[in-house]
Amino acid sequence: MDADKSSEARIVEVLGKLCLRPDFPKSIVDVGANINASISVPFIDAGWDCLLIEPQEHCVHVLGEKFAGFGNVEIMNCGCSDVASEAVLYHGKDGVGSELATLNTRSDPWMSSV
Image (tube, rainbow, N blue to C red; front, side):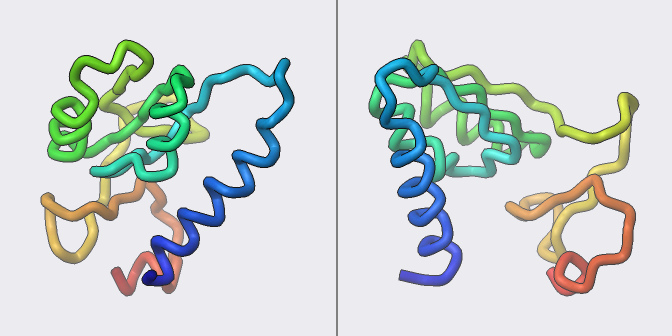
């Protein structure tokens, strides 16, 4: 398992443990759902209500096809920011088809490398 998938699996594991209480709301918001919404899938499959937020249109299209017919999934084509306004979406180095994007304008060595 590569490092990215290992991290996602760990997130799902921790979230699952935190959410075992029977009175815990069965809903999840996935900001930056990307093309697979892989962190949300186990919860979607378990019947949780899920809001997938994704700013990249090509990812939203794939998510729409993947979750067509799922009554517990809503997909929004937008980004999340600490400022209410329109913003430039910066795509990864592999261009508009990239699965990486950010609204961040601050210098960040990792984001600059990808």
